[in-house]
Length: 88
Image (tube, rainbow, N blue to C red; front, side):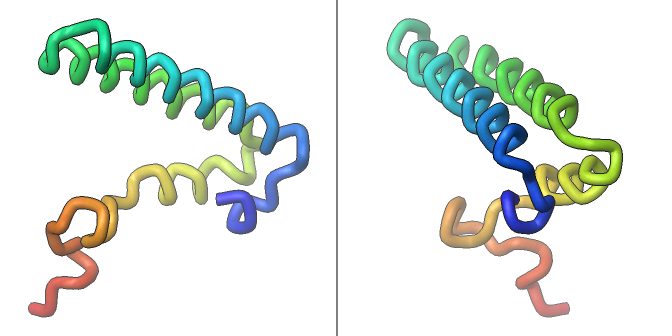
């Protein structure tokens, strides 16, 4: 994302801080709550993370960032084929 959006050092630091905060909260939820509660709370956090990421970026960077954030994971992450890799 850094290279694709031409992030400044300040933006990169802010995005790293947001990511570290969210991941620490997700880790906490995973250890302190039941699995279904933790999953629900984590999804809320990821929605907040997306809003914070878009708030940090400039107006010109946002459309590309939305495309990056909306991409589905690759096969290696979920072991499920991505629609881009399915031949029709």
